[in-house]
Image 1 (cartoon, rainbow, N blue to C red):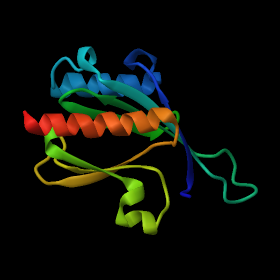
Image 2 (tube, rainbow, N blue to C red):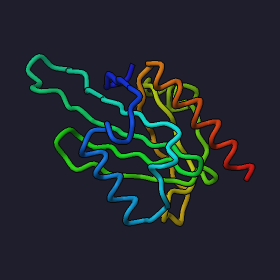
Image 3 (cartoon, rainbow, N blue to C red):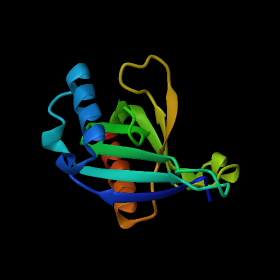
Image 4 (cartoon, rainbow, N blue to C red):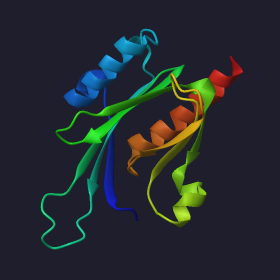
Length: 156
């Protein structure tokens, strides 16, 4: 497996880690994509803990990721514990998603999560991103709901 042990849990926007929730709120206020919080289809949080590789490696690195899914938007914030997280958002109609485990990169680095490709908010060129997820039921539910929401958003 990859360098991280990932654990994903379902939550509400109000129960997201405060730093993640604050970064997402700031992003929404800055970019004004609408009333996101009243239309959340799914919310989850992943804790990714870097596996120790050396005996005296010190405290392991922890990355927190918070995800909001609405009928039109995917918004996620991620950052190292005790640091300001970064936020990415994209209209569902402008992205594609693939299970990372089915991608070509999985042959090089085994990990669990989603590969997102397409156009992010305010971007002028296509890009890609990785969202690390655990193997828990919440992660599987998020995968299903995201794929379903993308399919519905492209019909409209």
